[in-house]
Image (tube, rainbow, N blue to C red):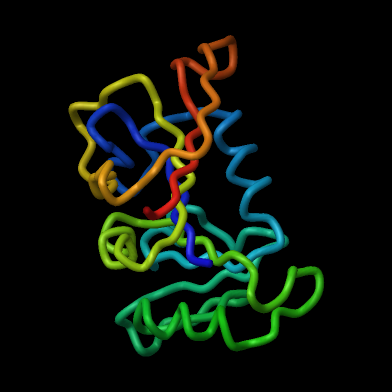
Length: 171
C-alpha cells in the first residue's frame, strides 16, 4: 500500500525555505509511530532538510543527480523506481518486510507525482495559516478521498495550534 503522510495548514501549506512550517511535537511523534519500520520515499531536498537518514526506516531518496550518494540511504532517480524498489527488494531487519505500507513523505513535487498512486493519506490538519509558505500539499478532493479516521486535539504548551489527525482512503 502506498500512503502519503504530511502536516498541512488551512491552505495546504507544507513548508517554506525547505523547512516545515509547523513545529508540532505531537505531530512528529505521530509521524515516527506511523512510519517506523517502513520504507519512506522522499525527494532530495526533503532528505537534506531532515539532515540524516531517519532511524528504523528504509530511506529512499529521489534525485535527478546521477552522482548523488549518501551513506545509509538508497538513491533512485524517479518515483516509479522508488516504489518498485520498496515493493520488490526485501527489507532487512528491523523493517517489516515486503507488502507492507510504503510512506511518501515529501516534498511538494513528490506528493504531486504520487497523489494519484496513493491508497491512503495520513494528514495532520493544523488549524492555522502561513502566508509565507512556498510549498503546498495537493488538494484532497472529497469525491476521491473518504475520511475514515478523525482525531481532534486542542493546542497545548508544546503544540501551539489546534490540530486533527485524519486518515483518508481512496474511494
